[in-house]
Length: 295
Image 1 (cartoon, rainbow, N blue to C red):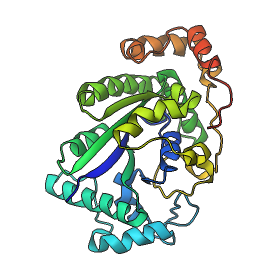
Image 2: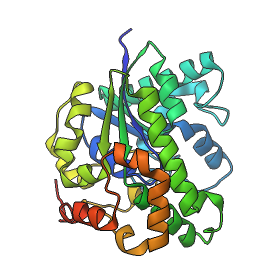
Image 3: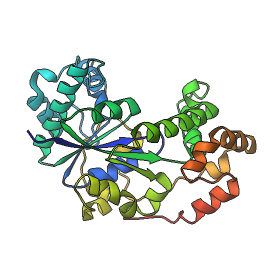
Image 4: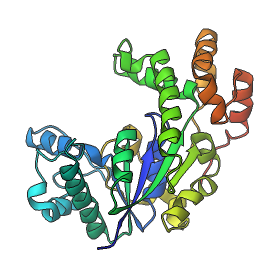
């Protein structure tokens, strides 16, 4: 049996994975399934009568794509489905079955898995049945940490460690050191900066698309008009966004102390990924790219 071609988005949260997924998922040869690792969780939510909405706007149970996936997977479609299981044999069986079902349901040639986690990428890379392309998306750590904090404030949970600015800077530095260190030698590994993606998506995504055996498709330039069926991700996936608008609010909203300490905490990794130390340097970099971009 031919290998299953998988394009995997790897990153820390709030780094642009939703935008990346919307762009790539518009390609007719790509089957976007979102953060598919949480499939079992979504099935359990539906079983409990809780709301669950696909990107297409339909509820999870009534979406034509996910209904088709349910029929194709048969007994594997249940609340006990665990695509993150520590049992290697079960991990292989369940994930390959889900990927193959998605390809069969869509007629595409590549599955887009936007689960983001490093551990999952390492396990997928070890499966001989998968032809894996890894797209590591990285964003300025001060922007990432600020985005987490804003989310916490919006949810009234800003005091939780999950949304702490400094905790997220430290987590960013660790992950964006570990990700290229662990996977950088993988033949399918490619890195893209969020800042480059919003400036020129076609150029930024070209290497990963070539690795997956694809090229840029005109529909990617009109991604907002393409119906996609994905799980997980932030609210942007449901907002009907049609234009790429760089988020540079962090340049003005992060305090001077936070900027200095955050930069110091992330310094080696920040420099390794080509980011500027000073606020002025980061602003100049952003200002060169802060024109509204349509693709």
